[in-house]
Image (cartoon, rainbow, N blue to C red; front, side, top):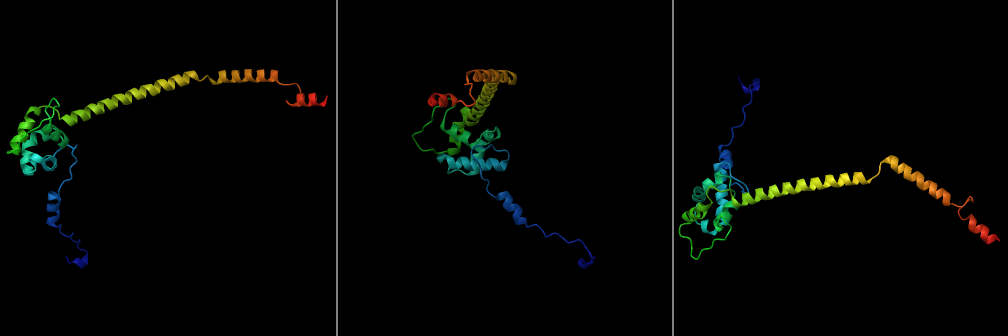
Amino acid sequence: MSPELGAPAQEPAQDPGEDLERKTAPVVWADSATARTRREELAAAAALRRRSVELRGVSERAVRAAVRDFLRAGWSVDDLAYALDHAPDGSARTWTSSVRQPVAWARARLAPWAGKPGPVSTRRATSAATAAQLREQLRARRAAHAAAVAAAVPAPAELAAVRAALAARRGARRPTAAHPTAHFAAVGAS
């Protein structure tokens, strides 16, 4: 069929370069995020490489190979950066000379952390649990306060009785004249 006789129009061919650009575009990485794909692992390795002076001379793929097990265990770049500079007991690690083999250095620094949860993730989970506990305590205190306020406020029937008693007391103390100041007018007239 010819196009003028109602043949379906063909869609323009997709540019093969678009797909390649999408696959090779740099991934912006948050240091607190965890990697789920190989591409994200590479982005996390690039972020770690930017944060660690010792790893800057190494390719992103080499850094990813050194920290892959930790990334797959759910560690973030924050966790890895902390673990490279601290021992599992929290003490800071220092060195006196330059690092000659950065990948071996990173593996050696991370070896004591193997099989342990990430330090920042652990603090984040702990702080989340603490926040949940504080929210629950606050909810309980608010409920207790609301119950105390409800118990302190008398019922409407009791309020009506108090108002009636007060009105009766006020009526007993008022002067007998039509106006409260009539007493003063009578005293001044004499």
